Amino acid sequence: MLATRVQVAMAALRSAHDELAALSIDSLTGHELVAALDELETLWCQLPAQRHRMLARMQAETTPKEMGAKSWRQVLAIRWRISTSEAGRRLDEAAQLGPRRTLTGEPLEPVLPATAAAQAAGLINGEHVDKIREARGRIPGWVDTATRADIEADWVRTALGVGPKELKDHADRAVFLLDQDGPEPDDTERARRRGVCKGPQGCDKMTPITGHLTPEAWAIYEAIFAKWAAPGMCNPDDENPCISGTPSQEQIDTDQRTLAQRQHDALIAIGRHALESGVLGQHNGLPTSIIIRTTLQDLESRAGIGVTGGGTVVPIRDVIRLAAHANHYLAVFDKATGSALDLFRAKRTASPAQRIMLIARDGGCTKPGCTVPAYGSQVHHAACDWADDGQTNIDDLALACGPDNRMVGPEGWTTRINAVNDVEWIPPEPLDTGQARVNHYHRPERLLRPPDEPDGNPERGP
Image (cartoon, rainbow, N blue to C red; front, side, top):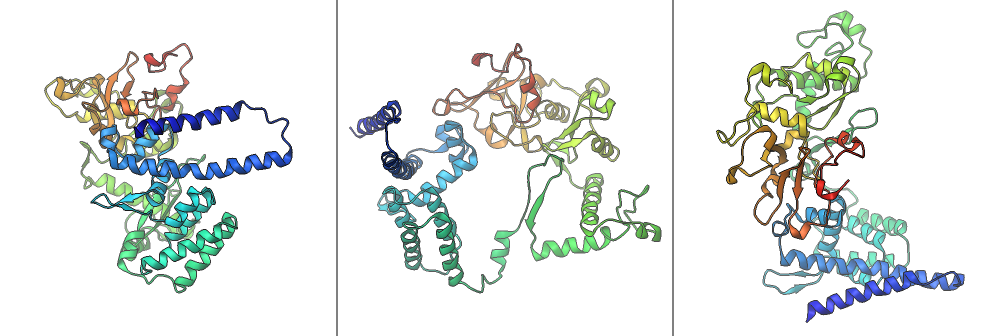
C-alpha cells in the first residue's frame, strides 16, 4: 500500500537522522568533515522538492475550510507554528516548482521545470531558487513561453557554477537587455502599482508610510495641499491654527516648518475635519470615530499610553489632545447613560455600548495568532453560539474578525470563556497541535501576570 510505503520511507529518513546524530564526529579529519558536509548540503537542497510535491498534492486532495482554516497560509502557519509570510513563501515555491495537473487530471511539468529539476538533484540551493523566481517575475509580459523557458534554463546553468550574488547580476542584465527602455506607462500598470502602505510603529511611536499615487490621486491632493499645506496653514505651533480662510502675514512669516511637515499637518487637519463632519457614516455599528482605550491612572498622571481600535500606540498627551476634538465614549459609561450591556435573547447583534466595552477589553480579534485590530473585528457569541441559544450579554461576547468568526461551527473551531474570563479558541483536530488557546497580541499586559495567577488556559497548566 502506497501510504504504508511513504510512512516506512519517512521513518527510515528519521531513523537515519537519529543514527547520524548519535554518532561521534570527534575523530573525523578535516577532509572527512568536508565530504560529510557536502552530502548534508546536497540533501538539504533536495528536501524542499519533497515538500513542494506534497503541498501540491494536499491542495488537490482537500481544502483549507475542511482543515479548519481560512486559507492554505493559515493551515501551514497554525499546524507548524510558522509565520504567514513563511507559509506564503513555501506555498508560492510549491506552486512554481511542484508538479501540476490539468483540469482533466493530466500531469503538467512545473512552472519552472529547469529550476525544479536542479533543486530535486541538489545542484542549486534555496538562495539560487529565490533569485531565479524573483527575476522571472520581472520578465516583460510580451515574452513568449518558449523564450521564457530558454531564459530560465540559462539561469539554472549559470547557477550551477556561481553563487546567488553572481546569479542575480546575470539575471538582472538579461532582464534589462530584454526591455532596455522599460515598460511603457499604461492605465493597467498604474492601477496594479497603486497603493499606500504603513510600516510598523517605531520605538518613537512614529509610523512610516510608503506608496504610489495614481495621477488622479496626486492631482486631488496637489490641490488640497496647495491650500491646506501652504505656509501658515494648520500650524500646530500657533495658538489658534488657521484651518480656513487665509493665514495672517505673521502666521506665514513665523512658520518654520518644511514642506513635508506642512503636508503632514494638513493631513491631520483634513482627517479631523472629515471625522467631525459626520459624513463618514457608521463602521460596524458605531459612528466612524477614533476609539482609544487607556487607564484612569494614566489619564490622571498624564503619563503612559493609549491604544486605538486599530492597534496604534498613542502617547497619553496625544490622547488628551485628540479628546479635545472628539465626541468620545467612556468604557465605564453604562451607569451614566443606562445603555444596556446585557440583551439576553432580545437582540442577536451587539449594541454600540457593548462594542465599545469589547474594544476596551479585547483590543482586537481574540483568535490566537490573529492581528486584526478592533476596527476590523465583529462581535462573536463566544460562550455559546446564538443558534444554540447563546446570549447577547457582554460577558458572553468577544471580538473576532469576519473570516475567523465564520470558521466557528460544527467540525470547525469552537470558543469558550474560561474561568478567568479569557476567550479560548479550540482548533479542529487537523490543526490541533496543543498550541495556545488565548490571544495576547492585542493585550500584551496579560503576559505580565504573576506566575501564581492563571495564564488564561487552565487545561494547559501554569
